[in-house]
Image 1 (cartoon, rainbow, N blue to C red):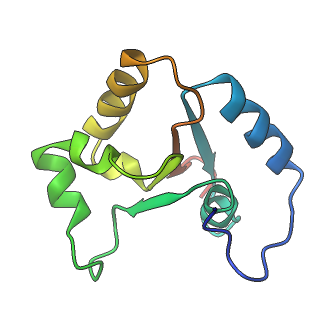
Image 2: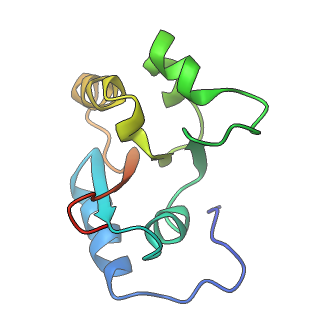
Length: 116
């Protein structure tokens, strides 16, 4: 299963993401606004947490501030979109990856503000 959006067009970076998910426990997907980062990451994910979605029913940003490890539960790989809004998410992911030998667990998506 993946969260690939209808109409998703394969990208050159898809192969690299697949390769990195086989090698590493977590990968960072970074780039300017509106370049397709989230759609690309969704195509490789089974669970998503939209940190900045105020209408999600669950306020992931507040949850992440209280206990970021709560966002790391679900069918892997888990995409955490806009993780930079709560930097402690990075440490929680790193800790979770360090605790096991599994690969391909998390995709962290963020806007590279130097190019936006």
